[in-house]
Image (cartoon, rainbow, N blue to C red; front, side, top):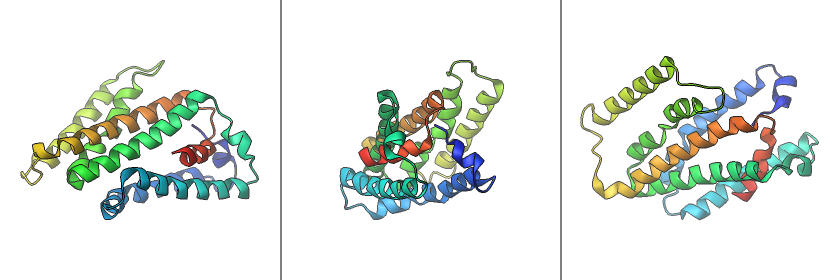
Length: 197
């Protein structure tokens, strides 16, 4: 999904700055999730996305955008948007409630590697040597972290958390890659996805 308004108004690097803000937010997701351990996953999803929907709705109103126009999207866009946001966070919250946070996060954060692989499956794309090398280096780095000093001991008792973390990585990478098929949809539509999630 794209947002032409970000690139044509305000600071020339506004989109990059907004994207950079996502990094610390994602960095504290595991910390906040483990801190909210007593809250059931559905309730945690509802609370989290209600805040996001309200904040985004205020931004839409401030910019004078019509909510109807922003939210009027094809069903497949809604399915991808809600499914991607809901699915990723649902699996992430399940993973962190059923496995140690470090291990679950390492598995869940394999999504960038999967994005590289899945993006090669899009129309007009192909797997390049750089894709393969990048994925191999990423997997090597993850393996070193997981197996390097034996500190990360994966145990069979956490299988549900590990499976949820794998589903999390698959969900987010699929969502991210499939979003490229809907390049004409404004990122403002995420307001509705948050509200439904």
